[in-house]
Length: 429
Image 1 (cartoon, helix red, strand yellow):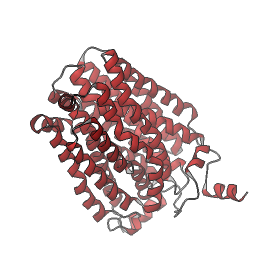
Image 2: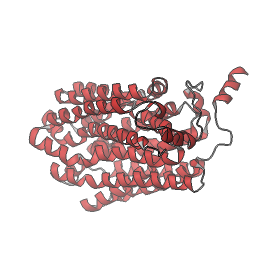
Image 3: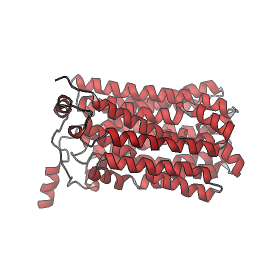
Image 4: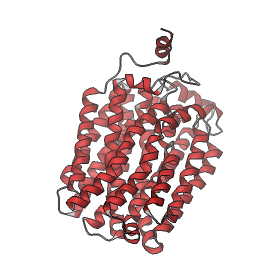
């Protein structure tokens, strides 16, 4: 029997969900200049508004990881995307800083299950040697949602106002939910889109094909592993650069490089194109290394280290006067960060005890998204006080360089990995 390719249809679905996720987040950055003008927000106030989403989004990461592992991806994702779509659209109703902060904080709760759910789906639906590319593909949705749609969102803001843009972007998630519930099941064996041959192929290619219905490993016990600490800081570094750009890039081009909003929208495309290419290439190369016999952790960490070294291009980008040169260097930095990002998610399945992938993904996303608390506010504060974005961009580069060192020096195959059996033994003793 010739195997089907339903698993890639599932990857496309989570790619679309990720694109919608980041479109709803990034709309604020595109609408920023218009909102600041209409509502008389300072750079610091707008930075606080940009950070508000991450307050709840981050705090929810550890509990939602456990929820995904317990309830499964199908129901969790459907409820989550409906929630965040509603509050994304309700951003259009905000008329004060306090009201908008509350709406964005509630939206953050809805978006919190997205990446832990994506990670669990990849772990359940993909063999080990395909996970790097699959993670690269769905993380490309970050670039598509946050960057490639920017000119269209800018056009809507310019012609219909910033409130209409939030209503339009907030409506897309509802359509996706119908597709998700129709096609997706938690296990390939239960799905109509994967035949027996594909199910056998998936299970044969998984490092640990046995399934654990409920993990006995608690989230805090995962912190016994050195590798967990490495990936926690690494995603923080990636997210710092990501959320700085997500919140400030169009506004930076308008304020610092004196572009119109439409021109800033089009010029914002290149960094996100580079990010998309980096995500796909990094995922593809890490899978190639695994297929050539490399240990999965070694393959992923090599890609992650190279990517974070490339992210250092943000530092010279902070000092160039030319707008085109700044955009080029920012693009190289973003491409490097996303080159590392897909493997940062793929490596979870290589580190986590079976049944805890969602929990570890939630922990990683929790620490990573603390950057979302810091980057928007600190960038606004520094830009307001120093009247430029130089210090803000340099800080992002330094944080990324430290991640490259940590990946390169400390992320290694663990000869005594944490397992369900080891935890059971500790409990008994």
